Image 1: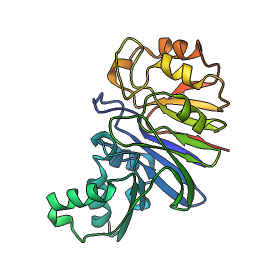
Image 2 (image 1 turned 180 degrees about the vertical axis):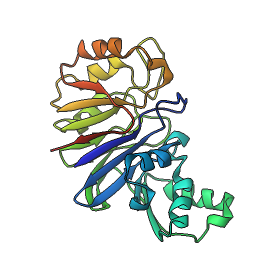
Image 3 (image 1 turned 120 degrees about the horizontal axis):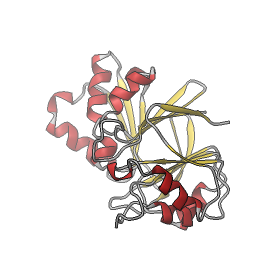
Amino acid sequence: MRVTFLGTGSAMATGERFQTGILVQEDGRTLLVDCGSGVLHRLQQSGVGYESVSSVLLTHHHLDHMADLLPLMKARWLAGEEHLEVVGPQGTKGLIDGLLEVHEYMQEKLELRVREVHPGGFSVAGFDVSAYETRHSLPCLAYRFDDRFTFSGDSEAFAGLANFADESAILAHDCSFPDDVDVSNHPTPERLGTALAGTDIGRVYLTHLYPHTDGRHEEMLESIGAHYDGDVRFAEDLTTITVE
């Protein structure tokens, strides 16, 4: 399995990190998890291209996780592709219907297959996925691909989510702010380290990074390390990881 971070940033643009998007690939199967602003460009820069993405899995419906969804639809239509599958939590069908109501000219340009999923197991793009409800300001799901890769979506750090990711080879976890920012719906390093303590995860990548984290990576890693002794790194746009 290959995991590519297309966007590791947040709703506040930095110019270096685009908004959330993760590409999961294996044996000819391709799945895009989230599609924030800039992800369409990152797909081209990655060499994969939007023509290869026929399935999108959304964690939730905040703009920084789905702003490029309609541009992806239009790009696929213009490229001669005929269909797109969009899977996500409750409300995903209403989201797509609303987008197409505003942009009427995109109606019926693609064969759209929209599916809503709930906590538990399901399949998408040939991948077997487990979903877990996170703690965020909108309904949001974390996703786990076998024992290999888990993505937290947006969430506070808490024991239930850490247990959901336990024994994953790779965990990509929201770590939006340093410790001195008073925030809910997202974790700080100290809270994340506390939640992960005692878990057995091969490697943790920190993502969904706000500009507040710039220049503060070392202190954030130290804060996590005070509670959790695993391998923790910062995710970067266009980094690809091979997960055995």
